[in-house]
Image (tube, rainbow, N blue to C red):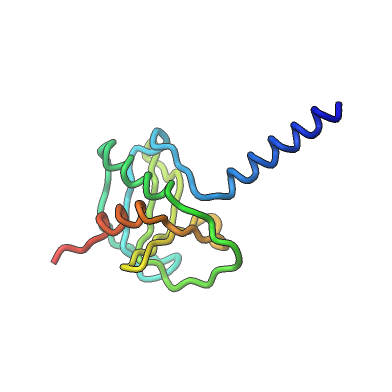
Length: 135
């Protein structure tokens, strides 16, 4: 009985730790990604920047979303550069705020604005590429 309890605690600990590392979205859950330029949190002045509908583009974008690590502590962020809408069957599935700069990239789940996720280097490269403004 004791072995079963210890094994159960270990599995629970691993599952809890695994869920706190970063964001994860399965590419099969998304039909379309809409990227909007924004000037503030909860802005009504969103300008559609790009729409991704091709499977390869969606997978690439979600690789960047999934390549994150959760930052500990409270966050006080500047206004986001972009809003990201993940669409499934014509409906909003998940939404994020996105910050992109030469120094890095960060994501915040719009349903949890108290948690920030740092995008790791490979993901930063993807986000810099998809958010580059052509001159």
